[in-house]
Length: 80
Image (cartoon, rainbow, N blue to C red; front, top):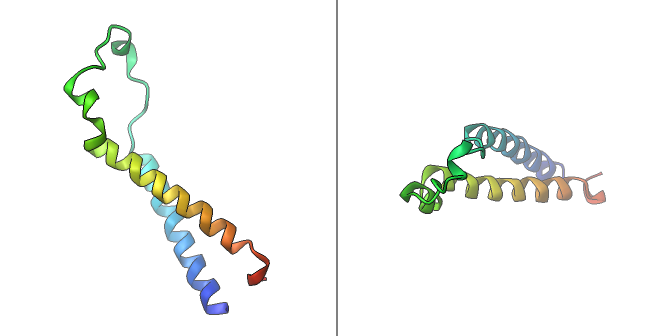
């Protein structure tokens, strides 16, 4: 069980570093005054899910779920 615990901790630390990096790579959500006049309906705004920003959002969700699952598993009484 100790080897499994060590491996899970290593994956957890790597996951924390990756999650921090992905969050820092993302742009801010404030689009300025352009959204008031309807400027968000551009080609870029409509296809944001296929861009690098959309990929970062999907990766953030996946890594955050992995973070939560690992945190719960590592806090189980099985490893203590």
